[in-house]
Amino acid sequence: MKKIFILAVSAAFAITACNKQELPEQENNVYREFTATIDEGASTKVIFGNPSGSSIPASFQVGDEIALYDGSVAHTVSVTSVSGDKATIGGELPEGFNPVSAYYPASAFKDGKLSVPSTQTYGSVPVLLNGPVDTDYNSITFSGADAGSAVVCYSLTGDIAVKEAYLYYRDEATFWVANYTVATPDYKLTFNDALELSSSAQKIYFVVPAGSKVLTLEIKADAPESAYGVDDYSYYRRKTSAVELASGKVTEMPELDFTAENLDGRMIWEFGSSNGGDCGWTVWDGKGQIDGNTQADHAVITMGVQTATVQSGEKFRTVYRGDMKYTTKFSVPTGTYRFVAMKSSAPALMDGVGYPEGTVSVKEGIKFDITNYSQWRGGTNQSLIETSADENCEIWIYDMYVHFRNTSSKVDSYIPTVTPLESVKEFQFKFADLTVTTDTAEEATPPVFDLYWIGFFNSIEEIEAYIAGTEGVSAAE
Image (cartoon, rainbow, N blue to C red):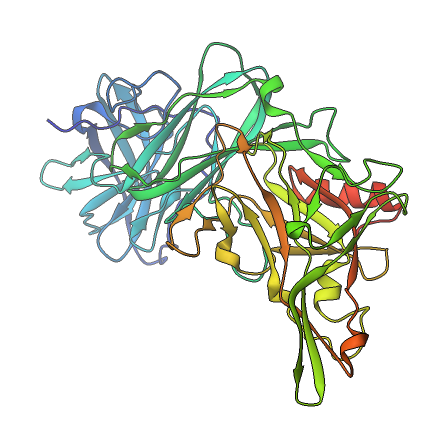
């Protein structure tokens, strides 16, 4: 026996499109009625109730709009009355119009198919239904099983108020997209009033196309007091393996806790004599040096020799390296702090800025690496860049929801979102393979760069606010 949706319309879901085509004036319209039933009682949208197995209890309501389709043209009718598990639908239709199929809601039907709406409303779930029209008996039997949609249910506990929720519906777990842009969600759930979480689980639902997908939930709430210059914070929970979403069924995800005291706890290292000096960071294998006391707002890093000076033709070449490492264990809730950012003149130096002519441009030598996760995007270059008011400085931003890859085994791994990131050995930025060419061996001088801060942030907007606050200027667009 098929298990499908039993649904009811809520006023929270607005039906805006009708797909009714303009009727030629010469056509004669006649009023027609059909009896509509839902296979095992299923309907379209849900007034919230706990799912029973893979079904959600509900029913048709007067005013629901349904698209009737003859294979080329669609017309809209509506529910005029409901009695038990049967509904009467009716409307003006062209004389001779013979529909073969019906689709609910009519607002989701276009170009011969149903599409899940990208914006949905808490309090109603726009499940897609369709069914054949029996013109001999003027009857329609709807089913959710063949309409191509599924329902994802999240149970939330905690003590914050959810203002909006978003769902990322992806083929893979990584959030990286081209052209250095941040991934955007696929579905949005709006709330008439903020949803206050408590120790009792609150359920939210998304309707999505059926399929095998990786799902990430984002909920938006008021920013905590520790936030920098933003009103809202987003909290993320990602399941890195694909979820099978069967058509016409509800998939329940594991219960998620959003208790405020567990959501906070970022790390920001601010360097220089007015801050934390070297903040416990060290330079690559002890071959370089970090001076956190000479300058008030930044540390000065002297790179070490990676490959000793050798003669190449009439020139001499020396390869330098200045990896920055933090080896003290720490824990950060990366479900809150999605981005890692760093302000430094190292990227400009790796491009040959601030060093004598002849420096080989090897910015690709910058890598972000975490023990147990390995290299960010498999060692591929930066994610996003913000400009700085300080000369030759840039702010490099890494999206922590992008994959990390072991460059030897080619195995991908992902930073946790439900549990904190536990850095157990080395959290590091590698500045390697900086080749400097000089006329004589004696001219080879270790390059130097500045490091202002490294930290975890909730959003790009918060990073921009932090830049503005620490530099006293507005961050660049």
